[in-house]
Image (cartoon, rainbow, N blue to C red; front, top):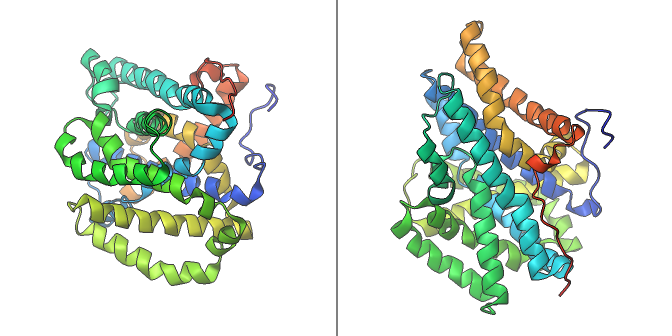
Length: 350
């Protein structure tokens, strides 16, 4: 990208175009994440939100973050072969841990400085939550959880010599233990999501195969699976407190359906903007809450729009492109250090 121009153009084509469905899947997931956070922002502002809007968020909540962990697991082994253990770990530090810590500090600082306009009530003690209670920092917990899951999986693979099936078994054990550490979200998030990362690693040879790509992209298979997806999400809506093993099954059903939908969209080149959104999903994730807070404050102070569904829609369709625009602007200003760590990734192929 030229540093002289700033635009929100479609994302560059992936080297292996048959995997572009992954960007579609990330795009769908991040839109649902933004929807959730915009809804919470309006609720915290004291606006009355209709129950159908809340139900829409709750019903589609089960698979959003598990899908991200599963997709990340799909490319674990290829990353390990390409970079080696040390290189993969450093790459995860640069792309997950570093931006998580940096943006958590930025977000907390802005919430303290602009406490009058922020929904969150922050103090200097909240900086400790970056490590001990990331769930208390709005949306950013996911980056820390994914880094911890990846690092633990890598440790178990390289140091303890656990194969992928044993890692899956460990994920099942973690699900049983997760309720015991629920009050410490750093540990809870690892135990809750380890199973999805493990499934992604174990299923990669199958899901990334050409013949399976064609099956995923089948409109016929998508329609056959649609009732299963709808029923599972409907059940989840009315059973928010459930056994974590049942939750994992429902989350997997949702994840598989979204992968099938993404593969179909990719195969037919439909809704190309979804692929672009998925390509920039990390940067949207980092900045959308802060940017939307400004837009929400302006809208509410103006008093021009009071309809909550319309406000929600406006926040969603502005927060996403504004995040991409902010990212490209910062990159054009040579501020890429805001998004990626400075540590050198040495390629150490296995």
